[in-house]
Image (tube, rainbow, N blue to C red; front, side, top):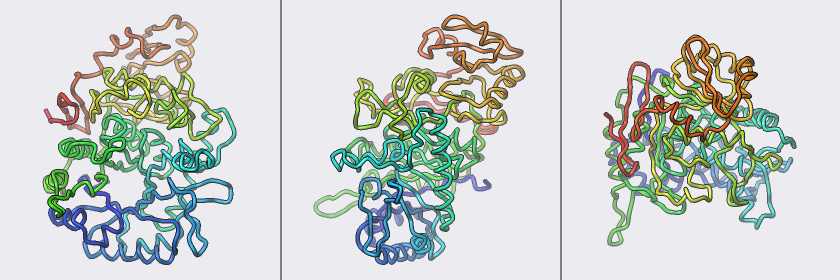
Length: 511
């Protein structure tokens, strides 16, 4: 990727694009232009021909503005009946699955002026792991429709590989229609690796359900491992409140995207940039701060992108779709990979405990988000948490992606034999310290390791065999690797970015 500048945009609806509203035209004018717009398209009932015509008009308008756009589709996530008068169904498939079904004519209409930069499936991972739960709830629990059909197995790996194949086939079909790129917008920090491996650009949310840099660590690991771009949605929603964050917090999350090598960043949604004052619409503090950021950082050179990231701490585990769901039946499904046949066990939960450890205990030991119903969810929201250059990889990561690591955790249901061999070599030759349960330890160590916490030298490095990632002795042992509390550190090539976190954990200062 030659272009290392951050592309900056915002999220709007097609009617705003065509209507010349203040939160569209006014923001673009005040910002001095943006790099792209994420445009929401309403689909479903009515005439497909009318929807195609509207798409062409949006394409024409964006051409006038000399601004590329990404078409975002969300209606199918909360609406079961998405059929048109001509008979096209935007979501329901003959096999009983329910997922976005874009006709070729729609992509042609969107790209009629050659300005389409990609297609985005809004909250794609959310609909997969929760089986279109908005439709389920709206139907009073009568319609339980999966995005992809389950494999009817209790094996995480069998289900995961089947889902992986289905996602690849689906992503390939979207791109075959003429979409330059295909992305999902993530709510929960899961399936980044499964998406990236199969042609879906990782796209993490900031300042919403999870700490922004926790989301980054997982999504950046996926982008780094599979050589993709990394996109970032700075979401103004917080639970059911909009805007649910301060303008200052939004600005700092945009700044975080610039400093951490993200390729595209956008704010959801631009309607938050405008307020009514004495009956008239005016650009408010959110719009002012957004435009300030665009003017300061649009076209600003960087010496790196996320693909130059050199993490110090790595976590390797199977991408099983677990973020901490469970505890109560709803609102989220206590299942893995959207399958009612697979419940999370202790192996799935190890990943959450590892993240709790490497964030100095600032995240929940039970969840990666505030969305789990537990006492932690009552704590004040924070965008940033202490972390020292972490990245998360999946079960098939290779040695070339791990050479910068000083500390590595192995956890979860499965890690490939080749990855385990590569990790062992890095321990022996590079001096890597690895923390792992016995099941992932080399055979000679596995057979002799006894007790809850044991340590073994192996060439230049060390194996720490640990059956409980919450063990306070483990925390003490790895503390020298975890960096300073109240700081985040990232290394990109030869450049190190160290960020001090404000007392409310919503602002950052480079030091």
